Image 1: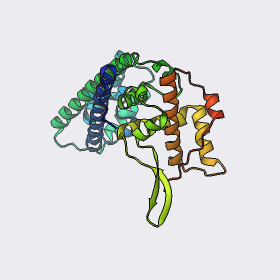
Image 2: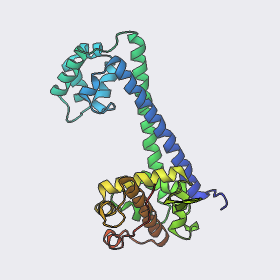
Image 3: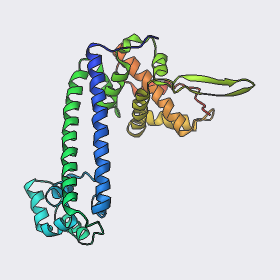
Image 4: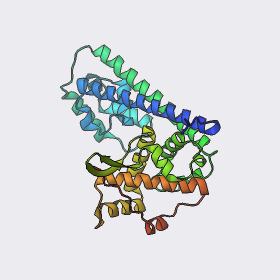
Length: 290
């Protein structure tokens, strides 16, 4: 098959999707650096906040980066920051816990000025890339509206803008495919025989395809299994059926292949998602992988 080069709106979405992936990689990199900073200078912070990027915590760190600075700011100073920002669900109790952890911190006291500069830069970078991501997602949402029947995909519980963007970016104009099996092959989810010489082994998926499309479909399958009642029921069926039950990962891949078929039908024919009909027509894929 000739290499496909998207044009028009499909080229726009692919480039925007690439920018989204790059931006997400930067956000992840910065979060990892923030986590490293905390492990050195304020390891007890994780006992106060489960998420390192909690908004109320980041507000305090901008004014009091190190544990000693937090102690000097005090409970009243911290609470004042939150009140002025009109943050809800935070108050005296959280402020007291933060100050207490700062007072007893075992974090490093070396090079405090450099540490303050580093965390401020990291927090600024984190905010900048998150704002960039918000702007990108807004543009992506606007561009996706130019693709026919995108609104019908959004009606599927468990499917969001990121999944749809990633799918369209990798597939391009879906009308160039004659059937869902071609999409399955593009993703590297085609079933291939594992015959070799005298040995006859079980069939498995090829993994020869667009890696990013495979990733998007896998993430979509995980989301649907967790949030969509019909897909969750299909997942349970695949794993517990009497004949040829699938292992967990095999079932997830089978769900990913079903996502391909559902997306193909909606985007090529404009039909609405019908979970009841899908459940009544469960296919039994041969997906016994070695």
